[in-house]
Amino acid sequence: MTDPSDASFGFRTVGLTEKQDLVDDVFHRVARRYDVMNDVMSAGLHRVWKDAMVSRLAPPRNGRRPYKVVDVAGGTGDIAFRIVDRSDGHATVTVADINASMLAVGRERAEAKGVRGVTFIEANAEALPFEDGEFDAYTIAFGIRNVPRIDQALKEAYRVLRPGGRFLCLEFSAVEAPVVDRLYDLYSFNLIPLMGKVVAKDEDSYRYLVESIRRFPNQERFKAMIEDAGFSRVTYTNLTMGVACLHVGVKI
Image (cartoon, rainbow, N blue to C red; front, side, top):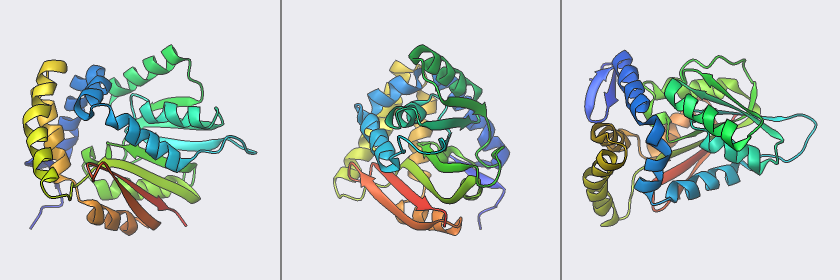
């Protein structure tokens, strides 16, 4: 029986507190090379997937009040900047990330780009410092698998959304196509850690990130977890044969 006080850190079983510390250490180390490595690892596909997520969100370009989004685990600002741009500046985005190093990169990028309407705060996805029903949308891209208690993070997502608000989660998932899944495994376990060693000077962190993908629930299991948190109309869309998956739910 699984101990509820345990969590997975890649293929290792660790305590919940230990996992958070280990994950923090990973992202402190890779923060400065995080976006470069995303381009290298995915051959730029992560940009297409993130654009698909923001297109699905379709933030309004006008209205009587700002469209408020919380982007969790989005420290470097990739999703937030896209949302503000897509909304012609009508949306405001609060980037909530537990890792100060990732947030520092995001703030620097926002200043360099002259982006307005984005606020960066250090916050835990399992205990967000926001009021009930504060946001119109909650987004999280490639971050939820690093949360020690995913079920608690989903409950927090539900809590901070207003009725009618939407939850959008972009995450690596299970490749279901025969042959392709085996090729993907070979690429992931052999080349990605090597890329991490060469580009980010950190092989171990990228080995963890690959292992964390394999430990994450598949599409149907994660859909059930989102529904268990209270969301309705939960759907998912596989991207690039399931390498990534976009999950969407609505708070009714």
